[in-house]
Length: 254
Image (cartoon, rainbow, N blue to C red; front, side, top):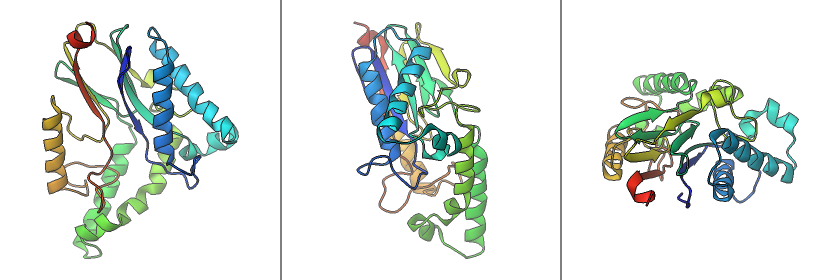
């Protein structure tokens, strides 16, 4: 999204909840829309800390509207509206990264991954390899239903208890500022920001799409050349949704 004062990519987390707050959309999409609304409403000069307070309040207000208690969400963080976001502040010439988004500044890659996701992805990869080598399932069968993911869902849910402790996300609870990234972009010429739906972020959209297409062609389950907690299921165009924006500072500062 682009406003007069900010550029952002927002990624709603894949829902682990059995019950959605809104019947017409998943929790991840709802979280994304609320973060987008907060960015559109905020002043041009807000700081990273102020932004964290604003988006936290926006999500918390939604919990109140839907009658979801703080006590339940404290013990069941998998039920929270959760999102990652990467924001460029035009006035402050800063990039803010909350959650597992990524960016390129003059070609230098910055990431903010969830520390618990890599072990879960490695576990899933090992399960898939055992399933295939034993003849239990074929790769094609696992793209219809990911039985390996079924076996790591409990680990994914457990990792939610570490959010805004070991890593930062937007979820309506105080954001762990020490787990966010604030990048000084005052001397940066070109910025690329994206969600983690691009496993290999490149300087152009065409290159990023080509790298993704190669990954999906060679390893659609994302368990060999690129390890993820989910792969591309039949009927889907990719293993995860994605957003990408690229801009020159001189173009938006005029």
